Image 1 (cartoon, rainbow, N blue to C red):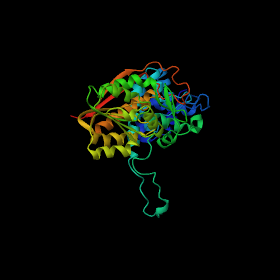
Image 2 (image 1 turned 90 degrees about the vertical axis):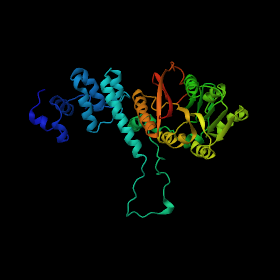
Image 3 (image 1 turned 30 degrees about the horizontal axis):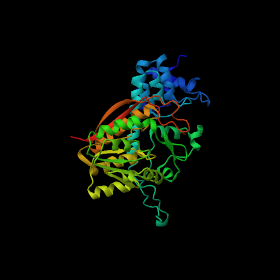
Length: 389
């Protein structure tokens, strides 16, 4: 259909942006409003958002100019991690179709969005000067740094909660986890909602991580989050001089004592949340050559507080530290986004990070009895952090 200049001029977008929009893009956008297309068909079975529809069109129309259209849609309010009916984000689709340049645009958009959201989380809402304050009714849940920051996959799920069953499932929060009953098996540790807290397939990753930060015997190591004890068993095999373990869940602590961890030479068990324990260790003047962090059901803001506020007081100047890098690992674009986000936040906190790519074996059959598959990406990116030179 040939569109008139009058029709093209009626396109409802910001005028300043429209002037910079190439003619073919204006034709495409207007067609999406006036004709049956993936952008307009909103039946529950095949509904798509414009950003997920566009990568399909790029093959047929303007692949070489696709980046400009993606930028335009993002500028006009497109959401980088919105999901279509096939559970794909625009970036997922671009990745699957081999559109690497468009995929990178979506990754960069995700990084910008997550960095902004994380920064906004640091600030408490301003109190209205005219609002009367009742001391008996003050909320304690809005302090800076205590609001949970959703990861990319969690935000996308929230956006679609009206169309998915996951909206009725219990939230995975630290407080709920610490109060839940746990199930210990040889292959996994589950909470009462059947969430995988830790699983045996992670053993190879943890072995490589432990050896990367604790390269020789006689060093001092601190681990936050015991779980099944996989990484602590490996640390013990490396013969550290001092081995501190922080564990918050009472059932895990009880299991540790049942297995005799408190009787092992050099092992010190700290029962409680790291937010309470680590400042005490700093006050005692404790320092470590290696620190490992692997907690469950904590937010990214908690993690950022850990390396921004606590590690600097506990890590020896020549020491190294690492963490289980599972942020966004149930979707490749989320994993790529959060690698960049954490890299920038680490730099701001005074740390350099090296990444080692490790292949993940086939996990077919590993998720039987587990509520949600929290790992789908093919490779694990192992971080080793140290102070900036």
